Length: 274
Image 1 (cartoon, rainbow, N blue to C red):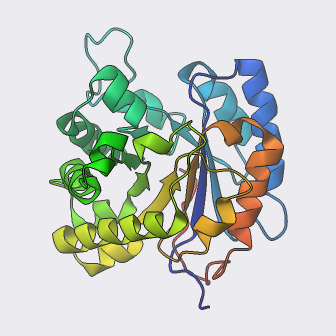
Image 2 (image 1 turned 90 degrees about the horizontal axis):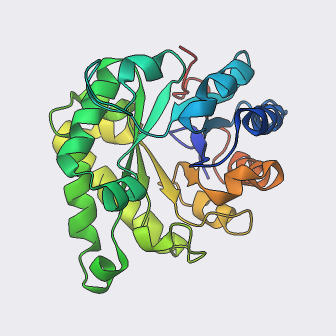
């Protein structure tokens, strides 16, 4: 198989876990894994700690291959938004930001419009948005998977320039698979990835569609990761629970490093520190 057009991205979403101390320890362990021979050139590794540990993890990650993401942010630069964090604040510590996670959409009422405003704010401040999309079990059972995913992708990236769309990451996370232990079949995940890439191509052109990285999330484990990474349209994973254990997360990272088509060819797009 020819090398992948896009470097694999393995991102760990730590959600509401870790203190500053435990986050530092976990980040150090992940940094060692990311710097290992055969990994550093083949996989981009990213961690998303809670806001209270963002500075601590950014300090540990500095000078290592590990990138840091925020788990969310507001779209305004400043303002009277008690409890919120702005893109200006995030950009001081992180290179990426997770947006539209199903736990935000369904638990906190975030809309497609909210995700779009946040995506534009992220891009304006040099952050890479990791836009999460995915259907609920009821929507899947009703045959609405494609319609829901297409709507969320279109809405999130509406108004972006083609080069901005190409810089984004889209995470397909079927809601029914997140934290349930019920992972999506790899063949079905790949099919949805191709739908997403087609939507990006239709709106922004082939170069953007070729550049945008599409990752799968939803009960990714060391046991099933390789099956996802075998699909050339699945460019990595957004990992939840397994990312809280360095050995499990490391196994997923290494699975991406040895997947068919890895490592990326010289000159392939890799995220650079900012």
